[in-house]
Image (cartoon, rainbow, N blue to C red; front, side, top):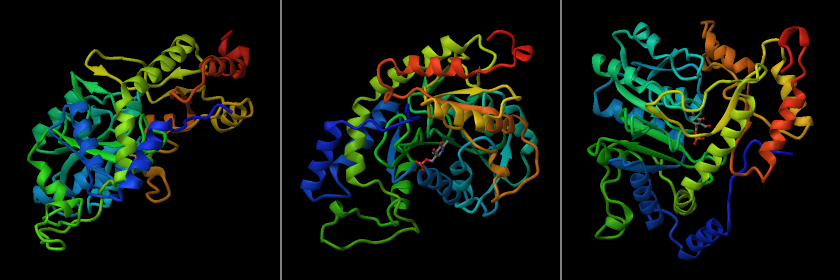
Length: 383
Ligand SMILES: Cc1ncc(COP(=O)(O)O)c(C=O)c1O
């Protein structure tokens, strides 16, 4: 079976984990500090803080905005209908209210609809860089500046993406990355928050570790510290940090394999009307995208779920990004229409491009896809 994704762990990561285990230092150690420093250098951020996962990093960002901008509970944050539910949950877990905006055909938030959603209660915008393609940050930042809104960029699957020469996450006020096992790089579970605002670092550091003023290794007398604000325990531990450090060292190589695989699929399917690419390869000169998976829209006449089973039976595992507009999940049960998000959720499949693919597997994927496009000839011609 060609898997949709698999974490790429070598002896180097295993050795790094053993070193941590042997050291007896599992939190507050040098691996975490070095990982953050290297991530900061990679993205050219002013601060880089590690978290237990991306969802908590997103939550920390919203909480930071609430605490430092005097934002009332229940204030409205505009966010994409088409994203992982974490983008929305992080808003609600911070006592704020997500207001959903549809995407355009590319899967990214439709910035032209944002002004229609702004009310007196709007305080922020949280967007996702869908499938590693940067959202329209020029329009989004213009709206944010005009209305005084803070901006959180969900970069969970956008490591390596740039907008106008800057790494994503640095256009808005906060950028949050995921190191979940199927992401561009992994720490097992993990996340990172970056920002262009150096001054955010102090408050965020306190907030992610109980509000405790002195970290373990900064204490003159063991066990003595003060607590200056309400916080939680959002930190990344040493074992994931050690894995992350090794993975980050290989990230350029990992990203270029993903790009190479993606381009093979793009070339093979670009004139194929059965598989319409959702987020086309570099479609705008301001945007340098990262390659996470290849998302293709199937013809509406094809039952997508049955088609995925068909592909699986042929030995190809696919996925869906994402299976429903967030407000249509049971926890919201909204009847509002999100046309593009609904189309992507219902008709698209996500095809693997990760570095786990063995030599020639990308060609096998293409063969399977081309063989399985059973077209009623009257509808689709000879593709
Ligand atoms: C866009 C997006 N945001 C956030 C997350 C959550 O990341 P994590 O699992 O690291 O909390 C995901 C996970 O897939 C995601 O796709």
